[in-house]
Length: 118
Length: 111
Image (cartoon, rainbow over the protein chains, first blue to last red):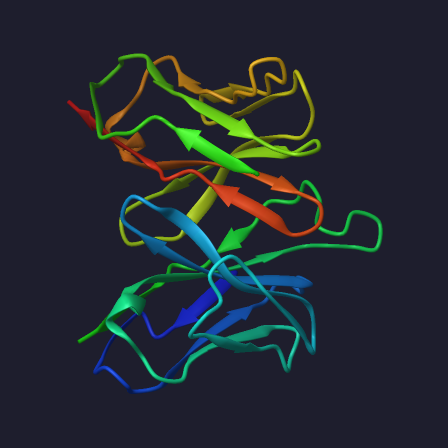
């Protein structure tokens, strides 16, 4: 069972470069999320999606864009990387139905992407 | 606002010691509460959850009880093992799509 797969696992960028992080899940989950994890700050939500073709801003969306063209994939883009975006990025997904709308459902996480911006 | 506060680490225990990691929360409404565990180089994995007051979540010897009166969800284990060494996160969720995580508590268990 692959679950949630993130690529790449590591990346080093120069300030101003752009890149896209890919998240893929094979659990047919409706909801998907992108977080960043920084020392002493826990996880902070960047963007999320409640279905194909829909996205919404989380707690720290500035400097990031996302797309959900297919249900199983959720892409996180950095258009112009900045050193403040050095972090570990986690993707997660959750099962949701019209009945529970994801309430009480745990999140399934990928193994993370470690991104360094020089 | 909504938030989760958990005890700061790192925590170092000897094998077979009793573990408590404190977690308190502030929430508008009625949250679901979770404990996640993160092993080195991996993502977070659900450890246990509780969805309403007085519920007790349990898994792999870990337990936590949803205490609405004290807004707490403390994690406990009676006898820790070296393999329990990891970072533990307390989290809450609220409708719809509101998730809040604590800052994590690092646990090291020494033989």
